[in-house]
Amino acid sequence: MSNTIDPFLSRAQPGQLLARGVSRHMRSHDFVCVEELVPTRGLRVDVMALGPKGEVWIIECKSSRADFTSDTKWQGYLEWCDRYFFAVDQDFPTELLPDDTGLILADSYSAEIIRMPDEAKLAPARRKVMHMKFARTAASRLQGYRDPGVAGLVD
Image (cartoon, rainbow, N blue to C red; front, side, top):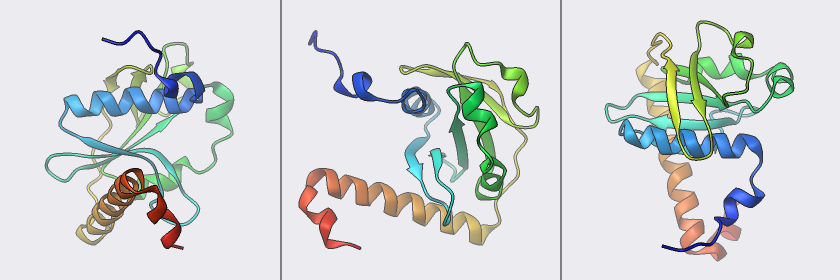
Protein backbone atom coordinates (compact mmCIF):
# COMPACT_ATOMS: atom_id res chain seq x y z
CA MET A 1 0.00 0.00 0.00
CA SER A 2 1.28 3.46 -0.89
CA ASN A 3 1.90 6.17 1.70
CA THR A 4 1.26 8.94 -0.81
CA ILE A 5 -1.60 11.37 -0.32
CA ASP A 6 -4.39 11.29 -2.88
CA PRO A 7 -3.77 14.42 -5.03
CA PHE A 8 -7.55 14.91 -5.39
CA LEU A 9 -7.96 15.34 -1.63
CA SER A 10 -5.31 18.05 -1.44
CA ARG A 11 -6.87 20.25 -4.15
CA ALA A 12 -10.62 19.54 -3.86
CA GLN A 13 -13.16 22.06 -2.63
CA PRO A 14 -15.31 21.11 0.42
CA GLY A 15 -18.37 20.30 -1.72
CA GLN A 16 -16.27 18.06 -3.97
CA LEU A 17 -15.03 16.15 -0.93
CA LEU A 18 -18.63 15.59 0.19
CA ALA A 19 -19.56 14.44 -3.34
CA ARG A 20 -16.71 11.92 -3.24
CA GLY A 21 -17.93 10.42 0.02
CA VAL A 22 -21.53 10.37 -1.20
CA SER A 23 -20.56 8.65 -4.45
CA ARG A 24 -18.58 6.03 -2.55
CA HIS A 25 -21.53 5.36 -0.25
CA MET A 26 -24.00 5.11 -3.12
CA ARG A 27 -21.94 2.21 -4.57
CA SER A 28 -22.78 0.25 -1.41
CA HIS A 29 -26.45 0.62 -2.43
CA ASP A 30 -25.64 -0.52 -6.01
CA PHE A 31 -26.04 3.01 -7.39
CA VAL A 32 -23.58 4.58 -9.82
CA CYS A 33 -22.91 8.31 -9.79
CA VAL A 34 -21.97 11.16 -12.06
CA GLU A 35 -20.88 14.41 -10.47
CA GLU A 36 -21.73 17.86 -11.83
CA LEU A 37 -24.35 16.67 -14.28
CA VAL A 38 -26.48 19.20 -16.18
CA PRO A 39 -30.12 18.03 -16.36
CA THR A 40 -31.20 21.14 -18.28
CA ARG A 41 -29.76 24.52 -19.21
CA GLY A 42 -29.01 26.61 -16.13
CA LEU A 43 -28.89 23.72 -13.64
CA ARG A 44 -25.93 21.60 -12.53
CA VAL A 45 -26.42 18.98 -9.84
CA ASP A 46 -23.56 17.97 -7.58
CA VAL A 47 -24.27 14.22 -7.72
CA MET A 48 -26.75 12.27 -9.80
CA ALA A 49 -27.13 8.65 -8.74
CA LEU A 50 -28.64 5.96 -10.95
CA GLY A 51 -30.01 2.92 -9.14
CA PRO A 52 -30.23 -0.73 -10.14
CA LYS A 53 -33.93 -0.40 -11.00
CA GLY A 54 -33.45 2.85 -12.92
CA GLU A 55 -34.04 5.15 -9.96
CA VAL A 56 -32.74 8.69 -10.36
CA TRP A 57 -31.57 10.45 -7.20
CA ILE A 58 -30.06 13.91 -6.97
CA ILE A 59 -27.77 14.81 -4.09
CA GLU A 60 -26.74 18.41 -3.51
CA CYS A 61 -23.63 18.84 -1.36
CA LYS A 62 -23.67 21.83 0.97
CA SER A 63 -20.44 22.66 2.75
CA SER A 64 -21.70 25.55 4.90
CA ARG A 65 -24.66 27.66 5.94
CA ALA A 66 -23.64 30.29 3.37
CA ASP A 67 -23.46 27.64 0.64
CA PHE A 68 -27.03 26.55 1.42
CA THR A 69 -28.58 30.00 1.86
CA SER A 70 -27.01 31.32 -1.36
CA ASP A 71 -28.42 28.43 -3.43
CA THR A 72 -31.55 29.69 -5.16
CA LYS A 73 -31.78 26.87 -7.73
CA TRP A 74 -32.13 23.68 -5.69
CA GLN A 75 -35.94 23.51 -5.93
CA GLY A 76 -35.56 23.42 -9.73
CA TYR A 77 -33.81 20.06 -9.37
CA LEU A 78 -36.85 18.34 -7.85
CA GLU A 79 -38.55 17.74 -11.21
CA TRP A 80 -35.47 15.86 -12.51
CA CYS A 81 -35.30 13.04 -9.94
CA ASP A 82 -37.24 10.42 -8.01
CA ARG A 83 -35.65 11.42 -4.70
CA TYR A 84 -33.77 14.55 -3.65
CA PHE A 85 -31.15 14.76 -0.90
CA PHE A 86 -28.86 17.27 0.72
CA ALA A 87 -25.45 15.96 1.77
CA VAL A 88 -23.68 17.85 4.54
CA ASP A 89 -20.87 17.24 7.01
CA GLN A 90 -21.39 16.60 10.70
CA ASP A 91 -20.93 20.27 11.62
CA PHE A 92 -23.64 21.58 9.27
CA PRO A 93 -26.73 23.07 10.99
CA THR A 94 -29.21 20.49 9.63
CA GLU A 95 -32.21 22.40 11.03
CA LEU A 96 -31.81 24.73 8.01
CA LEU A 97 -32.68 21.93 5.58
CA PRO A 98 -36.30 21.31 4.53
CA ASP A 99 -37.87 18.32 6.30
CA ASP A 100 -39.26 16.88 3.07
CA THR A 101 -35.82 16.45 1.49
CA GLY A 102 -33.44 13.60 2.15
CA LEU A 103 -30.46 14.06 4.43
CA ILE A 104 -27.05 12.45 4.04
CA LEU A 105 -24.15 13.02 6.43
CA ALA A 106 -20.87 12.72 4.56
CA ASP A 107 -17.16 13.28 4.57
CA SER A 108 -14.60 12.67 1.85
CA TYR A 109 -14.51 8.91 2.49
CA SER A 110 -18.08 7.82 3.04
CA ALA A 111 -21.59 8.86 3.97
CA GLU A 112 -24.75 7.72 5.72
CA ILE A 113 -28.36 8.29 4.70
CA ILE A 114 -30.02 9.84 7.74
CA ARG A 115 -33.40 10.72 6.26
CA MET A 116 -34.98 9.14 3.19
CA PRO A 117 -37.28 11.52 1.30
CA ASP A 118 -40.59 10.45 -0.16
CA GLU A 119 -40.39 9.21 -3.71
CA ALA A 120 -41.80 11.39 -6.50
CA LYS A 121 -41.53 9.10 -9.52
CA LEU A 122 -40.38 10.67 -12.76
CA ALA A 123 -42.66 10.44 -15.76
CA PRO A 124 -41.40 7.80 -18.23
CA ALA A 125 -40.36 10.37 -20.86
CA ARG A 126 -38.42 12.44 -18.27
CA ARG A 127 -36.79 9.27 -16.90
CA LYS A 128 -35.59 8.36 -20.41
CA VAL A 129 -34.12 11.84 -20.84
CA MET A 130 -32.27 11.56 -17.53
CA HIS A 131 -30.97 8.07 -18.29
CA MET A 132 -29.65 9.32 -21.64
CA LYS A 133 -28.01 12.39 -20.08
CA PHE A 134 -26.44 10.20 -17.42
CA ALA A 135 -25.14 7.66 -19.92
CA ARG A 136 -23.81 10.21 -22.40
CA THR A 137 -22.14 12.30 -19.69
CA ALA A 138 -20.48 9.25 -18.13
CA ALA A 139 -19.36 7.85 -21.50
CA SER A 140 -18.04 11.23 -22.67
CA ARG A 141 -16.00 11.65 -19.48
CA LEU A 142 -14.60 8.14 -19.75
CA GLN A 143 -13.65 8.72 -23.38
CA GLY A 144 -12.00 12.03 -22.44
CA TYR A 145 -10.08 10.29 -19.69
CA ARG A 146 -8.86 7.55 -21.99
CA ASP A 147 -8.17 9.87 -24.94
CA PRO A 148 -7.85 13.50 -23.78
CA GLY A 149 -7.36 14.70 -27.37
CA VAL A 150 -10.90 13.69 -28.31
CA ALA A 151 -12.43 16.35 -26.04
CA GLY A 152 -11.48 19.06 -28.54
CA LEU A 153 -13.40 17.32 -31.33
CA VAL A 154 -16.82 18.17 -29.87
CA ASP A 155 -18.32 21.63 -29.45
